[in-house]
Image 1 (cartoon, rainbow, N blue to C red):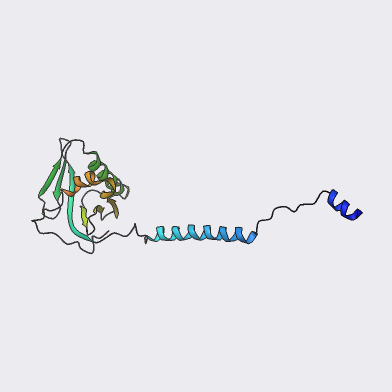
Image 2: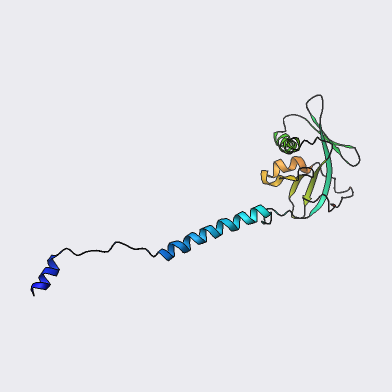
Length: 168
């Protein structure tokens, strides 16, 4: 009985909380696998958001600054003027400036035309075959994409099918 009293009155030694190490290793491995997988998809360009859909209509366009500050848009194949963009037109200027900056960084001028692609799912893309950069115009809303959509050939005109070389 005295031993029972000693055990009851003595402070009990508690073991430190122990979390299973194997669980921590498994969680760390899962996080590492996820990071490596995402990096591999992004670096190879095989992600679903990186694959471009097929184009149904394309138009090769040249953009030139005019003396009055406007932008003259012409069809690169026929040389015919398509539109003149006057005023601020911040989105159009911004999209063109982004692609022109990439060309300038590569030491290339404006000799090569840009390609405006209408996609089969309804998307619109401005593509630079020189720098291989593209701007998905629909990401900026229908109003901004509409500024470029009016540069596409009219439905009554013969639609140009995209060549394999100009696909982004």
